[in-house]
Image (tube, rainbow, N blue to C red; front, top):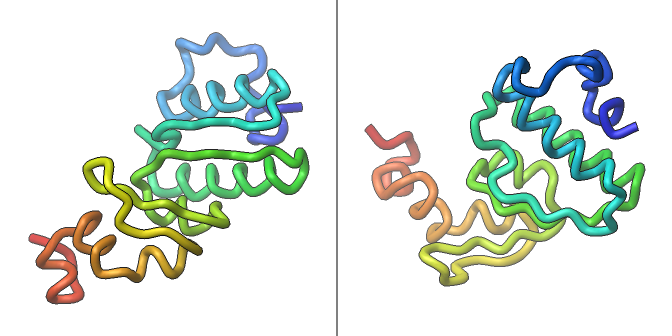
Length: 129
C-alpha cells in the first residue's frame, strides 16, 4: 500500500541500493509510512530531489494526510514543497522563530524572504547573483 501511495509499486522487487538516489529517498519515506504511524516526523525529506520530484513529494504528503489521516511534521528548506503541502508553517532562522502562520502569509514576510532568498532578492525582487 505505501509503495502504491508513492507511485513506487514498480520498484517493489528492486534492491534499494540499486535505485536512483531520489527514488531511494522516497522509498525510505514510504517504508516509514508502512509502519503505520499516526504522526510522521521528516527532516529534509526533499534533500537530493529535483524540482519535479519535490513537487510530486508534496502531492504524496497531501495524499498521506487526506487518505490515511496521517499527521506530518516536516523540517524542510524547499519552500515550494512547504507552501504546497502544509497547513501551518513555523519558520526558524538560527533556532529563532521569525514567522508563523499559513504558508502564503509566512513566505510573503520580508524576514523569511531575506533569510531564504538573500538580501539582494528581497531588495530587487529578483534572484541573488
